[in-house]
Length: 490
Ligand SMILES: [Mg+2]
Image (cartoon, rainbow, N blue to C red; front, side, top):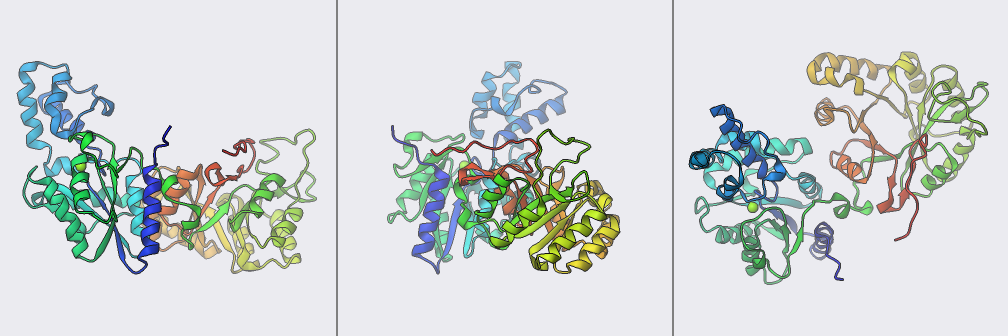
């Protein structure tokens, strides 16, 4: 059996090859818009629903995205399959044609495919690399197009500029193939070396393949919904359905300025994996044992998870020796105030741990002002962090008030704010904190895909379980559920 090539992996390899061959060139990935970046089914559904709304009918109430299986130019075919009075078909069709490209529909109904904005963001982040748009849409909707794509892209830190949008100067649905070829030449004439072209229409890929004699441009077919015949696909194109970031981005290519933290290193197995990994920071949950005699590593309190039969404590002191031996940096999640902090500080001082290798995390209601101030004065160069998910509604709703609260925490010594990946409104929160110039850590990142998405937002740091079998990392988080992947070699 011939193994199908993964298009995102091929794109990644081809980009790397071009980067190596032409180190000084400005590289460009060129994307089509409709059916490639945008899932046009949402627009189709939106316009049909607007008919219902206006006419107080419910013909399309139960229609779902999955029911839309045709190209946006083939609405008439879809209408034939739907149950509503056939005498109204022409009227509904006219409604659709009139509104499908209205500013309103463009603004309200366009949705990107899962993962595509992240792929664009990844290339926009690479040095000397840009993303161009090459669309069959006519010039008349240039400003609507830019406005809607930028508003969708904002969530992903993606932006599109006027000069890198090539539109069809022949008008609606006229000479599209010709215009696609001209689009590639337009970018080449601006000094770009186009290394990839992604389009959902086989005929557009064929047209571009004709002006790509050296094969520099990798032709990728977004196998979504398309109008032209599949057999028109050029033989050297590669099809794909999902924009899988885990095929595109590799560990070696992660940005160096984002700090990564291996979360929940509370047992010896996890510690062993962490110390031999490329990850610099490890996070440990520290608390006192029931006798208050030792600082131990344990996620759960003894109230929530009582002392287990045969439970052996893993002493922080023992872990510390390993960490120092391997040159790792240490993040401590302090679960208690007062005596625990004193003990931890004593242990760190005794081992002469450098301030810059330390990071403390604690809840505001646990450590309180005193706890943060003690940490900051003991280790002034350390990262001192508190989670601020509880402030999200305030940061979004009454930002100025929230800013005062954050400034107060900052005065106590807190110099990084931590935000959960799954906190509702996380993206908005992040943008706001960025604007205020606060350093942000993203935590609770469940898997490799989410980790890569978090990387693309470029916070100061990301804390994850490093339970990434694809990268042969088998971190087990704080271990309280003992959930981790089994090791297997494929
Ligand atoms: Mg298209």
